[in-house]
Image 1 (cartoon, rainbow, N blue to C red):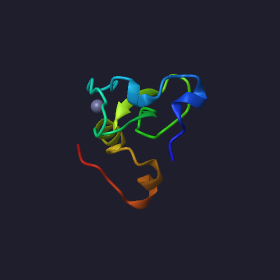
Image 2 (cartoon, rainbow, N blue to C red; image 1 turned 120 degrees about the vertical axis):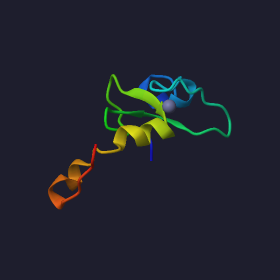
Image 3 (cartoon, protein in one colour; image 1 turned 90 degrees about the vertical axis):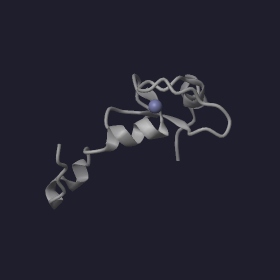
Image 4 (spheres, helix red, strand yellow; image 1 turned 120 degrees about the horizontal axis):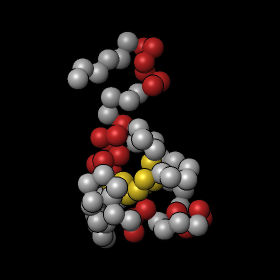
Length: 75
Ligand SMILES: [Zn+2]
């Protein structure tokens, strides 16, 4: 599923504050992942550790694979 932070030489995302809302993970709480600007889990340098909620928010309205399929988001 998600690349483990340890393998990348950086802290596990669960040990990081959520970059978007400041959520602090603890046992039983929503997980954190390193994601890019549109909420896709990534191992790239500069990725932000964000909680599951913020990851969904980042992904909302950004569905490049659907752009040609008549999927529209209204703002
Ligand atoms: Zn968050």
